[in-house]
Image (cartoon, rainbow, N blue to C red; front, side, top):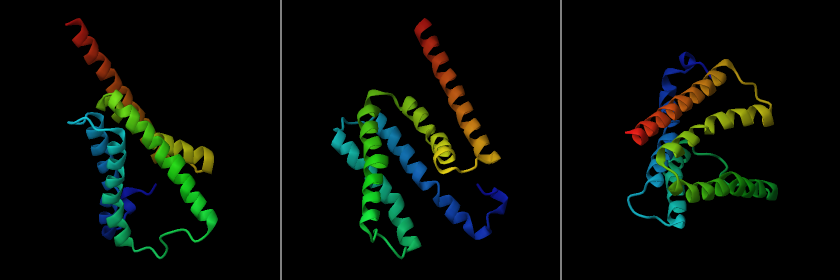
Length: 161
């Protein structure tokens, strides 16, 4: 992870763009956890790709990649595998489970995504975790612990009053 002081002056627009996806996902998680109208699972499933398109399409147009689709059968199988294992199955599980839980719990569990991604990279890919990554994971875990204690304390206060 680069030091924020080392980011060139012209790259701040790119840095700001990095916040589009988390903002879109957080907004969707909050709404889909407690929708104003009852939404069938298929409709909720269609909601998430719209958010991805809203974020990724402008980025793809801005970057103008030389290659858009894989050129080999192995590449197509890899894309299909990633689409099923890393996107579809977790999304179906989220869409079925989110309405059964509350927005706070969904946000708490969703916050673990960065910790899981960093640990997965360290274990499976052999990436080294630097001081900044470890600090980020510790801060996330502390924030989750503080929020969990706050929720439990608030729940106990409601029960006893």
